[in-house]
Length: 203
Image (tube, rainbow, N blue to C red; front, side, top):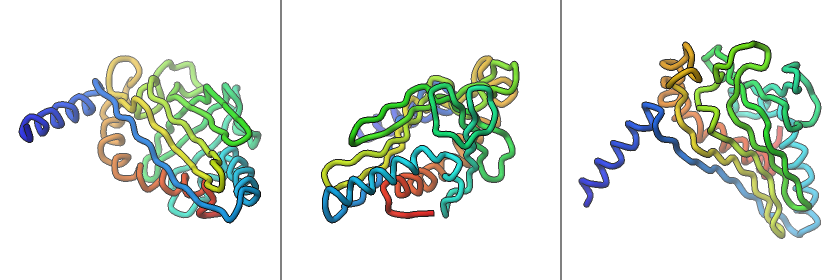
């Protein structure tokens, strides 16, 4: 049984490496407050931090650069909206990675938006400018439950973008980023961000 599990794991990792399989990953941080009124104030602050995408890069331990762009691909300091884009540049790698905001949801106790990899909105190319395929998604969320505030980053269907037209000339580079650089950096980056959303750290 142990050998079979090991072989299945190796097979899955190979499928991930070749872009045939994806992974789901969730990062969560939580902070408990003295009472619900304090937690509600913390939620309001966390929601503001969630929407202040351009400020994420200022977090200690976050070495990536996040820049919000409007629906025309121009940098903006506005609140995120459906159809807006986020440009992400990882440390030590000059290539741009782009995601489009496709869903925004907000209730009295939660706020979130979901992005998907996409082409660079400032070019005519259909190539997905990201190391994950366009079917992957990333949801950034802050929620209050009683006196507890939680921050989330939820990654779904994280397949490496190294096949067909999506990858274009970036197939090898995308594989290298996803399996080498990003693999070890992901937990650190999203852990810092979810701590920030939950109010455990401030800029």
